[in-house]
Image 1 (spheres, rainbow, N blue to C red):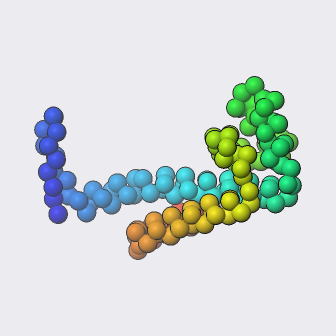
Image 2 (cartoon, rainbow, N blue to C red):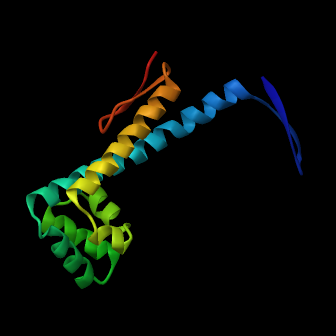
Length: 140
C-alpha cells in the first residue's frame, strides 16, 4: 500500500509496509532497552525495600545532603550499593512517587511493564522477540 504525503517542501510517497518495518526496526531496540532499564531499576529498588524498611528515609537523607543530582547518585551507589542506572531512575522520580514507594506498588508497576513487553512481542511476531532484561534478538 502506498500513500502520498504533501508538505511545504513537496510530496513524498511512502510504502506503508516497508516503511513501517524500517521504523519499527530502528525504534524497537530503543523502546525495549528503555523498558528493560526501568524493569531492572524497579527490581533493584524492590530488593532494597524488601531488605530494609527504612531505606526510603536513607534515600531521602542522601538526596537532601547532596548538592547536585550527580553527587546524590554517587552517594546512593556507594552507601546503598545501587547501580548507576537505578540511582538515575530514582533521582528522576517525582518526590511524591519516591516517598510513596512500596514493594507492592513496585510489583504492580513491574506487572504493567510485563504487559507492555507482551504487547510489543505480540505486535512484532514473528520477526522480533523481546527477552526481558537480557537481550533483544531478531528471529531469522
